[in-house]
Length: 341
Ligand SMILES: *Cc1c(COP(=O)(O)O)cnc(C)c1O
Image (cartoon, rainbow, N blue to C red; front, top):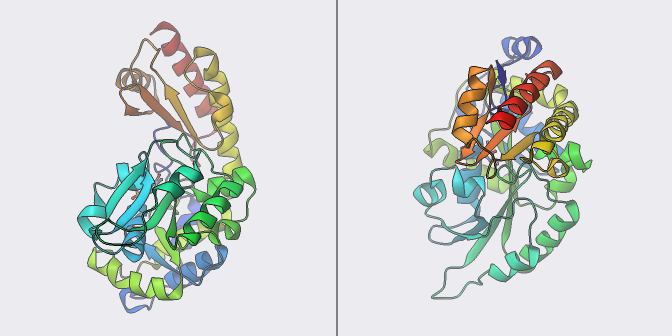
């Protein structure tokens, strides 16, 4: 099977398992796990922040950050297609009492003036805006990358308004590799970041919230309240550290394979190859004989797994466990299906 459904389907490599097997561990709820403590310090330093907190998932990392930044009953601004709006099951409202208002879906192509104009100042009786969340890279935006200049403009606007800026950086590593922007250059623009080790980096589990020492001290009980206090989590932290040390630069290979997929499928009218910047390849099936579930089912019968995201949108994802042969197979199978319907 060539599995292109997601970059979360990767399995730990032999070297990663070795790092896990030999990790020093302790009880992380007591702050005693040296591997977790080292990973947190390392990731904080990568982004030029004071501290970080290891969490079981990217969703929990985002939700902790939103609870840090937005008091109950106050407001978050995000894109309508943001992960925090679409895929976190209403967590901002259900867990943090956060009111969310969205700008229209534009993926990574942020309109800073439009976002700035949405910010509502504190003052009874309107809901004050307390934070803006952006996604880097943008998942439903086809893995799009927001340029550093745009993020700097946004940071200027939010800090002038006294509003916090959060980055859902589940795949920020991909943006760093695609645009050659140092992680610390992103870090300096955001009050908090949530980053994932279990997507393209290939760790089995793990994400981190990154912020100031004061924020991370407040984040620890928030994580515990949500059931995210883990004990000998060093086996997971060691996998994450191995991923950071060995699997970041190689993301360029995933990007090249995604580009190759997109270029091969572009003549079928389902993808704009020039828009594919990272490891996600969205297929627009609006003019195709097959809708997304039918294409996914037919491809699966032929050994190629893809994700049906919307009725007429499918997604292909390249990752650590997908080689050139698997990409060739996906191109052959999808080309045959999309030609004949
Ligand atoms: C995957 C993802 C997350 C976190 O997902 P988990 O499955 O909870 O780890 C957050 N944001 C974006 C943009 C993602 O793609």
